[in-house]
Image 1 (cartoon, one colour):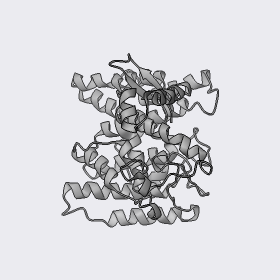
Image 2 (cartoon, rainbow, N blue to C red):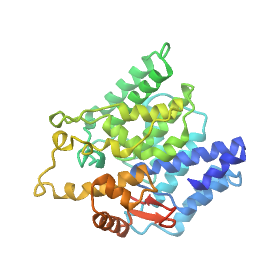
Image 3 (cartoon, rainbow, N blue to C red):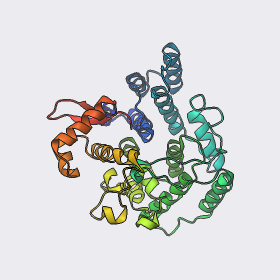
Image 4 (cartoon, rainbow, N blue to C red):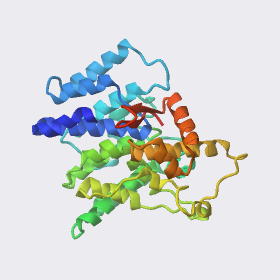
Length: 354
């Protein structure tokens, strides 16, 4: 994001607006652990400078990837680049219709030619589950395939009938957060739900007169997704309950300019003084993968929260020895999950993929 910071200092409204939209579009790729290429950054800056149109950006990306096809399914850089450009195009348009159809069209525009044609812009016809690191490998219960259309219609009808008049700004922000949480929980699509929901939400909030702080989506899109997960997950047996607390913090920062601290680590269901009482550890024999992932996930949460954190500080936060932290960090670097940017002193960690 540092590539776009200079536009804040230039004081040119058009370039600033374009750079903020690009930051949002690129930042939203983090919700699926994706990182756009240097080529996309370079091309985006040409668009901000007015040298090329967004259409030309997309044409150049098509040519770029035709010339060097992706070598493996694991490499999703092309997806990150093309979806970033498409989000930028949609957020630059002064058009919107509040309807499930618009929601589906946004998804189709983002993912046609990237996801399977049976997925892009289509309501899923199968049930899904997604293991969430913030839930220690558990999943949110999403709408069943057969109920998605009816659920969307219901939520949209309820929102259309809702009266904002008389609400404080804080109450309005909380209501918007609840509505967005509801349509996300339906998870209408097989893939790409969070990015499509975020784009729809930004467009909708504009129609209500809110100017969303794009920097929040640019820098905290992972927090946004995790907050959506926590708003829709219950495990009463272990005293874990759905909470809007984290999502409300995000939306109040986004819409009202509040300065709530956004920490991914706070949302992990297995972090806290009463961890063992609330969410007892599973047996290693029955759940070996989950137990191996716990330290990794906590480290990634710390890095997402404080990129400049030192390994010594990680050890203190997690109660682990320096050698244990170093071993985990070396494994994460070897798997290209994280990397070090800059020197040991004054540098920071960066999450490449999750």
